[in-house]
Length: 140
Image 1 (cartoon, one colour):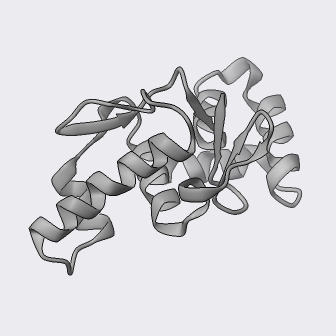
Image 2 (image 1 turned 180 degrees about the vertical axis):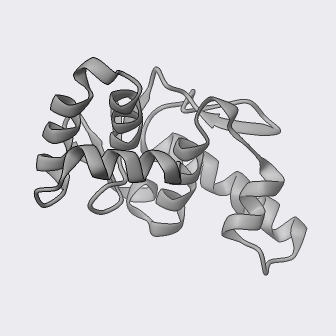
């Protein structure tokens, strides 16, 4: 299982440790972070191009995106990492993220404070969990 960390620095971890190759390159990590943030909706290829390669010629940007998706699949050894063709999304069966865990914790009020506190202790300095939770929820 792959794990994308977006809080406290962008990185990918495998069960065996940090990912290497395409999984360690900044632009490709940004692509994964964008797709993770989009969740089940995914993003169209055109939106991804607009975010990551806005100044490139459209054909060149499309080729770069195709190569990035291929390189991530190859280097992370997960052929089914991405779902969809025009609207691309991450396969939740193969990749989790701390952002997803955080959002899930916000959605469960009874356990929210305890889980957010544990998440906060791992990646952030001590915080006022209820106030911060409200602020982050408003930003999402």
